[in-house]
Amino acid sequence: MDKFAALQTFVTVVEEEGFAAAARAMGMSRSGINRLVLALEDELGAQLLNRTTRHVSPTATGTAFYQRAKTILGFLEEAEQEVRADHTEASGTLRISAPLSFGMQHLSKAVAEFMSRHPELEIDLDLSDRFVDLAEEGYDLVVRIGQPQEDAHLVDFRICEAKRVLCASPAFLAKHGQPQQPDDLKRLPCLDYGLRPATRPWRLTGPDNREVQVRPKVIFASNNGEALRDAALHDLGITLLPTFIVGEELQAGRLVTVMHDWKPIQLMLSVVYLPNRHLSAKIRLFTDFMITRFGPHPHWDLVE
Image: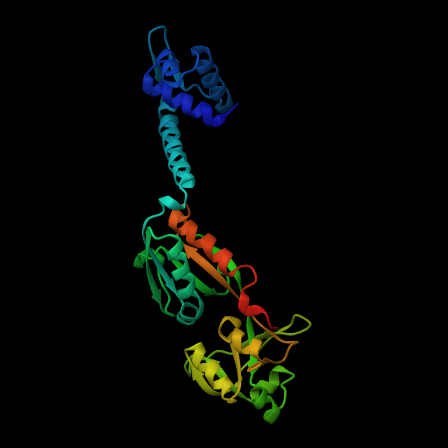
């Protein structure tokens, strides 16, 4: 039995108040209509319609089932309409929140390209490192960089890994030597993301998959990744940063990675939105664009 066809047929019989009228409305034979409804009743193990020679009406069970079936068919029709919508139907304003450093270095250029492809869309781009409440603040989506979160109230669509590395300048390492173990970070000058005293230990995973936490010797702390990168380029210390901030410097050799046997806990670049927005044409378009532009192996990760 085609359950969708049976639901649609039952709803039409109730609304047309008879098999003959339903058959005319649906362009089917009366016997075909009756067969679908009987199959539905048999499947449910319940009588849905009172049948007389003159009139057809829903039973109490049928009335309750009609309301549910009507709602289901309405949701399905709405979903089909949204899925059919192609990019030419995406219009209006797309409100995006994204982290400051990633936004300035990579996302702003990507958004400009996206808008050139879809001139019917307007975009509000808020670059900030603060936490955004999607439900309260009216954003359509958030570009988020962090550890994956399982949250039934949000859709977390993962674009690519936001890899982080320990790195320093060649001149710094020539002067201070190469760190080999996490404890070396306690004596060597380090550059840390965050503001004291709220800085956190660095979490590293060793060759045996054992995780350790170490509090480095922090000589400079900042809540801005570019500031830490610039300090590292001036030979001030070892820093722990995402490759989307230091990738260009690594590729050029101005910074080099250290402690290759010890990997920082990695993050993910994700597009996050509310579950009731997952069929929005503009969100779907932007998510697909992000996958094409950045996933699964972003251009800034060309150097280990």
